[in-house]
Length: 313
Image 1 (tube, rainbow, N blue to C red):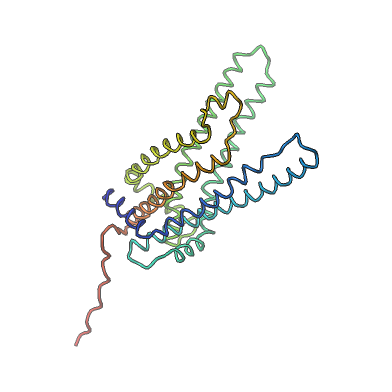
Image 2: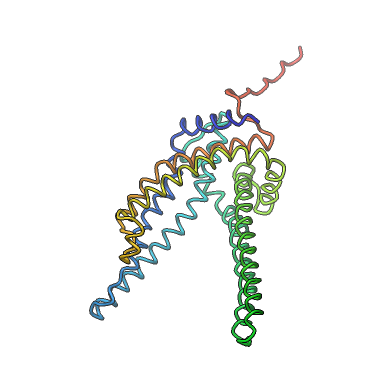
């Protein structure tokens, strides 16, 4: 696989179809709307009159509900736009007609299966992690409370074992989330580009990941480095905007709450490079998926169909 050609082709398709950026922007814009609502929902002055406290609490509850609804809609729209971008890039790479409306329609049609896939891959492991965490934490806590105070050495050993088990469980959970994220990336494209069902796409995504793991890592490596540099730069900018007098000064004065306007400004600054990187990465992964599944589209031109043979005279 020619990695540099895949990266260039992914950027070329992205830049030639700038409506792909709009697909990436839509869920982020909804999140931008819900962010100030979630911040304002916690502003209740306990020193105010009881009637004002009740009215303020009601407004905060309403804002929290609206923020939650917008966040859920943004999550669903994220699935739709991911699918729409994959469909649009695949059509563009094959030389077929594509566009914003057509790709978005394909994304909406794939939403039920993508939602089922996301619930299966993310919600189920989260529930299992919570259950396993409680299975480890509850016995250790109950043993500590019911033990003899003189057995401090035994309790220290039990506590150490509990901490080790919890750390191992957390590490397994993080690795599991990374693995499921990779499987979802290719399973979702199987749903959109191959019209697979939930279970069939799950098996398909796992197969693509197993058979092309080395190439997937090499293709993802440049984006990992770019995201690392971008994250460090944005983190420094965010700290400067959120705590202009320094984090130590904010902690010493007890003023660790971030100002809403600065937080929104940091998010807006984050949007532009995040949209460019996310769209470019999605296009490149789609090209890689087409290559790994036997449909190499990295050529500059699309091979025309073979004309029918002339009838025999």
